[in-house]
Amino acid sequence: MSAEVGDQAPELTVVNNERKSVTLGDLQGKAAVLVFFPGAFTGGCQAEACTFRDALAEYNDLGAQVYGISVDSFFAQNAFVAENDLNFPFLSDYTRKTIEAYDIPVNNFAGMEGYTTSMRAVFVLDSQGTIRFKTAVAPTEQPDFEEIKQAVSQL
Image (cartoon, rainbow, N blue to C red; front, side, top):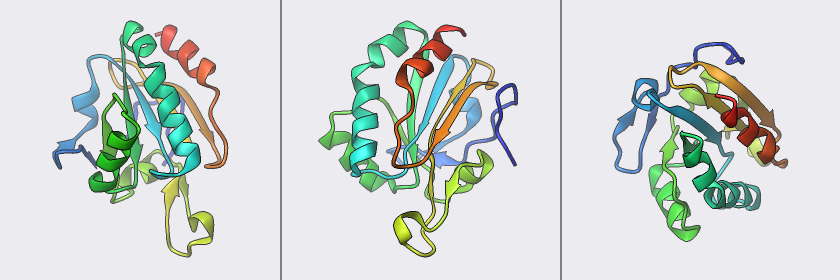
């Protein structure tokens, strides 16, 4: 399955930091910026998360909600959020169903046979859940943050 610009976003199968299920329908009603992180407590993910943290007011002013998504457990995510004073919700895709649905898995990450994480990807969804922007780069790279804000501003 793929998730391309113009498509309805694939269903989400994630849990929030309180272990409650979150679906795509729960995110609809306003623009959503889905930020897929390869793994909490890695340098690249910390830099990316802090960049979104520092720009969150801009996203809010544009009417968008940022969500961090990773395959990490909500236990690790809660520690990551606290350590980095993150101000947006994190969602756990510990089953990896969502990264599969969005077609962004990275198998055997960092040479760890059998360990699957996600690409560093961002999907901007409009209020009805249609993908309006997509970027996906290797876990060692960073997305173009200005390009993401520009996409949100065009909704």
